[in-house]
Image (cartoon, rainbow, N blue to C red):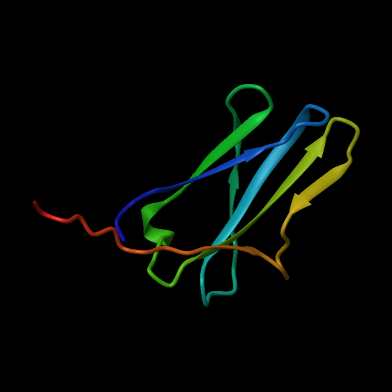
Length: 93
């Protein structure tokens, strides 16, 4: 696809000590880990590289651990979230 895919997650409760994104191309078994950086107001972001973004899609899950060691996740390795990737077509006037 040739485009980097941004991933955005917002954690609102306690301040998170460590937020991580795990992603893989649809149809592959191994996840790649990306640390997520804090931007503002307890929001975290990471960029999935263009090489991992295909028309088949991208699967991902997020984990966050606070300073007390409590773990929160959105999705999991066994039950990931899915991003549909569709080519963008521009109409000419």
